[in-house]
Amino acid sequence: MPTDARPNSQTAIEDALLADALLGGGLPEEAERQLWQASQSYHLDDVAEAHLKQAEALAPDHAAVLIGFYRFYFYKGRLNDALRIAKRCLAKAAVENHLPPHWRDVRPEHAEFGSFDHMLPRFFMFTLKGYAYLQMRLGNLVEGRLAVQKLLDLDPSDKVGARVLLEVVDRVELDDE
Image (cartoon, rainbow, N blue to C red; front, side, top):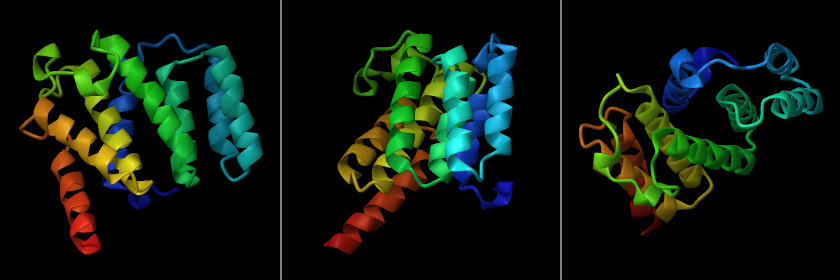
């Protein structure tokens, strides 16, 4: 898919998630090859997904594998599957940041959420934004709004652009009235 066709929030999520410092290396060469083959066979859903599953078997819960699944499901319109992966990413981000297991329990003092210089909190923030976006796309506006409000609570300067999602959900709710 051409880069310019991707939603801006998704590109930002991918940029944050793909940062080498965050991924921490350690992806086995064969898993990397499986991810590459998945990208090359994107147009063949079953084949691409099989490659992703092989990569996962070789490197379970590795960020690069999770990102591969997320992107595949998101761009194929399989939003429930993308949401499932976003939840796995949130769990990973919580562990990596030493945060409470549930995003609702995270507080501003737990990490430097407003700084892009700190990759792990950034990973958490962009993952939570992706989660919020998917919840909204799936019609779960209350859950999406809560996640966006948490983003703004954690970073009032809104470096991840959560306010845009809040404006979208506000408009949708106004249209429903």
